[in-house]
Length: 253
Length: 174
Image 1 (cartoon, chains in turn cyan, red):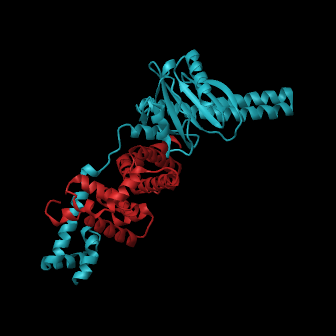
Image 2 (tube, rainbow over the protein chains, first blue to last red):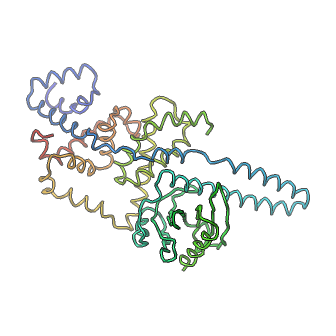
Image 3 (tube, chains in turn green, brown):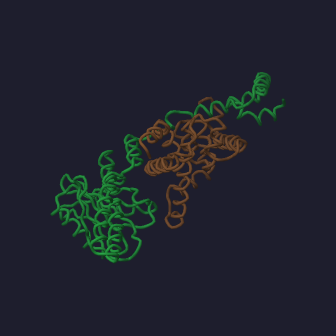
């Protein structure tokens, strides 16, 4: 084996990826050839420098829980509700007849979609609280939070601040809901966190605020100016409604 | 996913969370994005767990993480066309400046920087080989390229690192 052959195989040699015969041949060459041995030494020292624990990025605390929660199915509850609704739809079918059934089925389809979203919203809210990862960008300054989303989402969310009214902005975070990345804005009312998820709606239609309660959390959701909004918190209904009203007044303009 | 399958999924993939994050972090250059990418990768992995044939879950999972990282990068590239990205621009300026290369010291920060500046395809194989200790065969399966390509990318990547760290490797410090 000449020097050129050896140089060519030096990397797989160093990686222990050569068959035994060639490995031994190169080993023999390196004991005789100072130049190739120097090359091999440089390669070894480079590899040692890269394989340093300080260059290894360990997963941050909380990622494990986040991943587990994200991959855990959230189907309980929805099934039960769907069953109930199926029962109601069947009853209506008997009582009122075909036209009413169609309306009911449409209602059911609409409810299921919202219901599913509600579960995602609850899961995202709980996840953020549990792993203590409410915000990716922690700031009460809307001019810090809004630009932070730039380049991370294919839309630009409205980020109003209501510190003056007692609902200060705490920051923002990227989340994943309904099979798409969404903006999560975080507000606080005293010790209560409010997560507000927003993403572009499928259409320009306006939808008035509707409310839900799930697992002790209150949810408000609406659609305006082509954006869908889902807010969730354990805040009491009155203050939560006040927050939603403030947000609507300041984001639709 | 049934409880049994779910347990198998977690047993096969959760022990490799560090590896998943390390690869995503090196490919995306962004700690927050890396977390999002890892979560997305686990979601995809859960969806396609049926296609996992058993054996080493790490290489299989890393393949999914790599794909998710590239998707994230592609999406960001599309956005970078609209938004000026300081990171990318700064990096480009530094690496094209020979003086900058020459004055580097032989410390871990320089090695990290040099590795970050490598083209993604080369960085990927270096990370998988040197930090994860994957074999050529495993890297080939993660990166979805032939073994010959793995070998040539590793050589090129290391040569570029040596060139960037020239001042280090001449001496004894490395």
